[in-house]
Image (cartoon, rainbow, N blue to C red; front, top):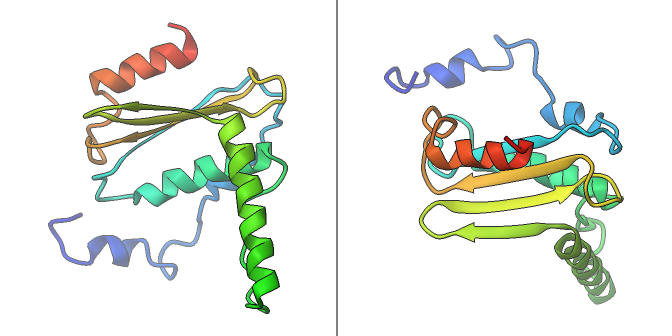
Length: 155
């Protein structure tokens, strides 16, 4: 589609594309007690789907596991007190996030973040790979991703 300017935008226009799939709602509908393991892999240089999409899925699942999503700024008030409250909410969220999430940086390859959706710290593992490269079509079969799949599913 990149060969034809604006083709992707035209074909995915809300006027032509009547059905949108809400990935986050589908994933968060899985019960936290479900043993289902999720691997979200995304390359920074994906020209089709922005990295922020994969990150939003991971953040949404993590927010659900933490008992609520990321704090949101209150548009109705920019008082010093409101700003301080927002900062305190963010600090508390980041502390819960750091406690629940394991991060591994692999130089030259990417970053892996993982957490368990259930309170037991084991059930419903979610793994997010932010690869440095791989584009849209070449990430899934790369040696590192295959090894990560094996480690997540124990094969």
